Amino acid sequence: MPLPSPLEKITHPLFKQFGLEVFIKRDDLIHPIISGNKWRKLKGNLVQAKQLGKKGILSFGGAYSNHIHALAYACFSEKLPCIGVIRGEEFYQQNTTLKQAAQWQMQLKFVDRQTYRMRHHPDYLAELAKEFPDYFIVPEGGTNIYALSGMAEVIEELEQQVEFDTLITATGSAGTISGLIAADNNKHQLIGIPVLKQGEYLVNEIKRLFPKNCQKFNNWQLRTEFHRGGYGKFSAADAERIVEFIDTTGIPFEPVYSGKMLLAFLDMMLAGEFKQGQRIVLLHTGGLQGLNGLAERGKINLAQWHLPSALQAQ
Ligand SMILES: *Cc1c(COP(=O)(O)O)cnc(C)c1O
Image (cartoon, rainbow, N blue to C red; front, side):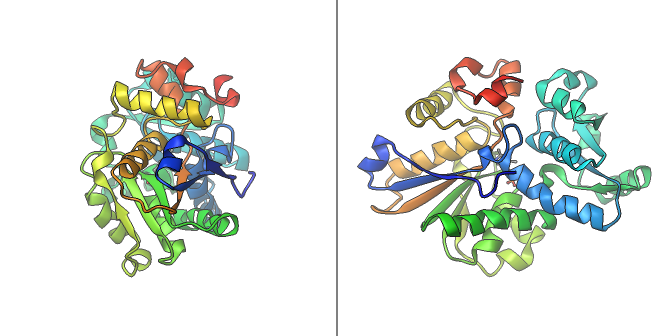
């Protein structure tokens, strides 16, 4: 993996107007197809699995999951067997995300939605551990304490790359922002943008999952008002704004995570929340493979989204 991931300065007429310096940390470039933050979160989990003498990894995800996609490839490249417990029916294995995961030798285990809802329940996890005793079980999204060290590397890399005031990231299961909080040591303002509705619960989730790291710091916040209708939801106007930004800057985004983070940042800027001269880093968490699934479901027209050629070839 080419690390550190590049940091690029973005030029845009609006940033000039508001007197901001805006940078983007291109974790989408860590790998041509593997989602940046999922790769980082998995690293420590792979180490832990090996240390425990496990032969493989088992984890959970939806049918278009960036985490499942990244896990399949990570295990493939490390020659570790892996099992994906997938929410939904077997026909989903036709989609690009799961077709690729299967090509990378992930074993797919489809479960109905009711069973999938048990994914954090101790009884269900104990059942899985009994059925697959040689597998290290990683929660959905790869979010657990072993994810923190990989995310810390983002902060370490940034310290070598730029002086900045504020970092903004998309937030789903909150493993990403937790790792950033833990490593940042109260130095910068860290803003997480939950991409799902009613993201307030994530504050407690962060404190519950990562108590040592997060209780003593007050430099972070979740801005829960930018979910745009819920997970995977966005309006035609949202999509248009993202595509316009892609066209102006040449940087690819998708509307489920990185694009929502971008729109939230633009909205905060337009509302005058940032001071003149402030230096802001947007964390591009990757996830571009998800564009394939959105196109397959007719939610976007892929031709407009200017995918990197590595993704187009799939
Ligand atoms: C999973 C994901 C996120 C959210 O990360 P969490 O650690 O779950 O908060 C952000 N961006 C992309 C592209 C993702 O795939």
